[in-house]
Length: 395
Ligand SMILES: Nc1nc2c(ncn2[C@@H]2O[C@H](COP(=O)(O)OP(=O)(O)OP(=O)(O)O)[C@@H](O)[C@H]2O)c(=O)[nH]1
Ligand SMILES: [Mg+2]
Image (tube, rainbow, N blue to C red; front, side):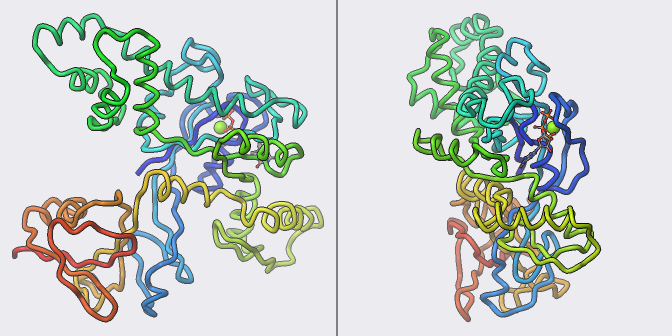
């Protein structure tokens, strides 16, 4: 699972990324600070099943802190895009491949309108962030159009000569962009796309394809600045789904937690000051975050956006495999050691393959924890969120 943090320059992408991963990366109030992508590990946050079961777990592939499980996902922060990037404006389109590696995109928008269309700082409220929300998917669509149109005539001739299917030919042309062939088929069907399509039809096809293949979650960042609240209201009324956030606040809280100044669980709804080793300015900054962000919005929004991307938009679920269903342990006796993020509706046999190819080859069935019992489940059983399962295999 890889999530890309994307958007116009200077909107707070690297701040969001650093808050989510605690990777140190350069943040500054000027355009094109990030050039080479930053990569790191972030986490989705879920209530661990250990709580309901009343057991203490020994998390191995994830972390469990006070019954909250943090499950790792990969995150990439890329250079800023500006309108016209597909024509080489700004830093151009060399980052398309970074974006296309990802399963989903978090689009960081400066919702306060304090950055103009090129990313230069302006007075909050003086730029309409709706422009940013609209430009990004358009830019990506135009990029893909450029790729698709390269050799298009050659592709069409090849299809005619060899009777190769259109979806297979497109799949080849878009290879390396991590697009599911099924999504291509579906988008062709939905849009009536064909080899004789004009640019407009191609763009319609690309739009449908990318909405499925690279879904975008909008992070309405910089909610601490004036004009944000008004803009969120206006944009929501126009039918856009945006999630408010303050990346800077999350970064401040996580760093203060690391330094032992506060008690804070990433993505939490509260924090507690535990050290007096702060000057008045720091104290005031924390109190500002408490009253203007946490108490007002419920959290900084960063974790909420990551969880929303994985669970609501990509539709993943969390499943706990064990090797002894009665004890809930692995071979070493670790309780609930692992949790996997998998697409909803994955069946048990395919899940076995995700854990290890050998598991799938030798698969004979499975057991699932249900109340105090372990019930039998078969290859076709569709896994549910928070399932705890033991996979049975031939020796
Ligand atoms: N007020 C406020 N400022 C923020 C917030 N998040 C980031 N910033 C500021 O916005 C500026 C740009 O932040 P970056 O994280 O470097 O932005 P970026 O999108 O990565 O920029 P590029 O790498 O140039 O594309 C910095 O001055 C940050 O401190 C926020 O939540 N609130
Ligand atoms: Mg950056």
